[in-house]
Amino acid sequence: MELNQQQKKAVEYGNGPLLILAGAGSGKTRTLTYRAAYLINHQGLDPSRLLLVTFTNKAAEEMKNRIKKLIAGKSLPWAGTFHSFGATILRIEGEKINLDKNFIIYDEDDSLATIKQAVKNLKLENLHQSQNYKATISAAKNELIGALEYQQFSRGFWAETAAKVYREYERLLKTYRALDFDDLLKETVRLLKNNPETAKKYQEKFLHVLVDEYQDTNKAQYELTKILVKKHKNLTVVGDFSQSIYSWRGADWRNLSNLKTDFPNLQVISLEQNYRSTQTILTAANQVISKNKLHPILKLWTESDKGPKIKIYEAKDEKDEAQFIVKTVQKQPLAETAVLYRTNAQSRNIEEALLKAGIPYILVGGVKFYSRKEIKDCLAFLRYLINSKDKISYDRIEKLGKKQLIRFLDLKEKINLNQTTREILEAVLKATGYLKRFDLKDEEDLSRLENVKELMSVAEEFPNLKEFLQNAALTEETDKKSYTRGVTLMTLHASKGLEFKNIIMVGMEEGLFPHSRTLMDREEIEEERRLCYVGMTRAKENLFFCYSQRRLIYGSYSNNNVSRFLGDIDENLIESIR
Image (cartoon, rainbow, N blue to C red; front, side, top):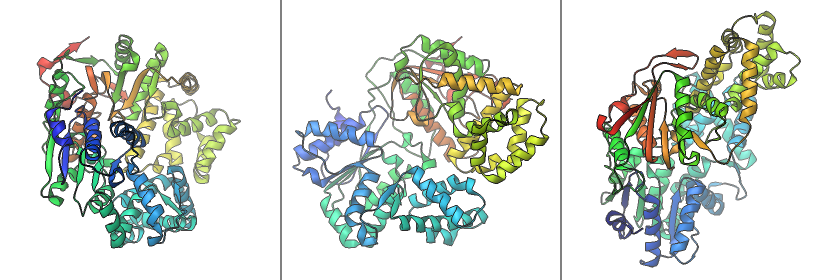
């Protein structure tokens, strides 16, 4: 495939800052790799003076391999993720900020274990909040806020306690000669800001810096990029405002807008020709995203066929929705079909329906419902209530903390097991205070809470406790078979960067998508709209939407209105199916 006019313009752009606004399916990876090859093959750039940065190891490897084929197999020593770049620089220069050159890098589990140790050292009673402290510290580091600075502006009991944990955590990391993942960026920025000679060395070294997915950068990544291009100002970034969906991770689409302020002579080239989807899908996606007013929007188009109309199914309830999915995927090649939903908790109904129908599925970026930690914790409580010889469940409850165990055992002596499953589960959660371990400001914790609430939906379906536990055990056992091929299930967030012939987007109801947490905030609603746009533009040929008249979710029935996003699409693009 030849480069189109806009891609060619971006590839052959000379020196100076360049922003490539690349719409979904517009060939951004191809454009960025060809630009790197062009600089080396036609501009005579030494590959060792090119820095290519992306977000995932997979994307970095793909780009390196593509570029190598275009530059006769020459090596690219400075192509990788932000974190791998930071680790390399700190290995070479870290002693200048008193880092041990043999520092070890802690992964997520190591980091959490160290935070738990910090909580114990401080003799705090809320060990179960360790994950929340970890999220708070991570967010601070991504904003380049150190432990002392965080302590200075922390107000209120939670923030002040988090500040103490942050300081102790940092002390332990220093003692262990370790850095966590966020340090790889924070400490690199600190190194370059506090050591002008070192900064000058790398500013001189990198004649061109290329960055992918710039809408996903946080403050640390933005600052690092800005420092590195200070001398030559040869920065090429690829991004799309409309695909910025990770604000809860610290990503800020405004970093794309800030480029114009920091680089007044910034050249902007837009890639709007799409090579993935039909025109019908693109027109509908444009209609949805065009309602956003806070950021620029690309208008995607294609030379491909108009394609079939978008199909919409109105389900009676969540069971009917799951059956619609079963019937739809049975008519399509499984490997070319994906089901997308807003929250992890929605997967339970779909998983159970596919299991019963014997349809293989792959769960991307998540854990199967009955294997999720919070679900296994709740089941352990219930199993031990009816079988006090169950040591496995007892051991699991014990690991949740002595106080919770004592409160649970006290409840066990008094509870009436003739109540409904839901009443028993609610009594357990209330007596143990289990739900207090979740931080309502943390996106991942909110997802865990939704899973527990979804378990309430199962409790509604199986009011007899023994039948409930039997269903859970049988579903879990059937679930254990893992497939390498099958229909793909994933959240909308996990779908970014992927494409399928057939996309089924479910739960298209107000309060579910857009999510109830976002309804009162303009910025959050705009992010939900971007998320819908991302989901729609994963589809190559067929796009299906489904909404329910009535839904049992999080343990209670709701009758929600149809999602506003469906109302944005012209009726002539839609076909209702029964």
